[in-house]
Length: 382
Image: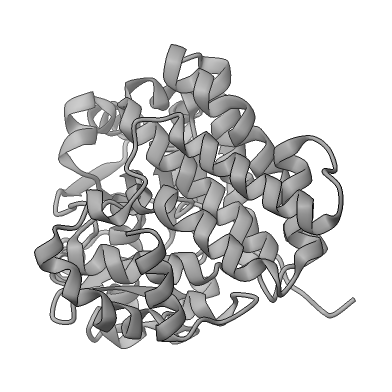
């Protein structure tokens, strides 16, 4: 076996684990915390709950609310300036991937300077970051576990992938109770994001035995629990989706992603789509694109989806992909790009596919895609 590494944060998991946020912050040396969140978390009451927990431990805080879906480069840079001016120490984010990625981007600039676009790609962050504690409010993005940070470059209209070990937070808090306040669409989008993380990590060129087991477990848990979680808001099912998300995140953080995420970043950056919206459209087409390169590994995924072998490995792989199409169709989600992008905007696809080729996620795809191949996938799912 090749030499590999496996990096994860300290993970505090379970119902009510948010209550330990103050004690965890103290262990990181917190005296004046820099809080990052968004309007939705404020309205749901979770931000105030966190503030109360910190105050109970005698910890002061400064709040930065500058978070939107698909966080912008200028929001990150303004946040870093706010961090420096207020003499804060530990960075804590509570929210979905947007809030946590904003916090990560702020941490990069606060300790390394420059503009956030200077760090696009892999391993470009040289200096240690401030201590970070991330509290996820979704079961999907994985930013609270991973060494990834996705920020939109507004000038180019593209989501930048920033990947470095230093982005793995010190502590991740995963409290399934928070998921009870999520909408149906957010539960679906988050879970499908985690599913795509798991599948792409399993097919990655740098997957290892340490990531593979987490990938397949995540696929199994999401398929078994998402429909019930949406239909009933069962806390048991939501908790299983949280476990799946953590497993998928540990997998993709260490194995990387693939062509589906590369294309999703390009489309999402230009059209300002929520990240989870595009996966039901792209994922199975990219799986078919990758299947010929490693049919056996795609059959492993197929066996998890189908719960059995279906003829040959190729037959099993294809049956699993078809079953996944059926699974996505059982939810109220878009299944074609034309449902999200107006015909008048279709002409941008060629330039976006050319941009996707250079996304860092394409490098670990088992079959790195050319722009023409990306374009054929877009045409296929239009």
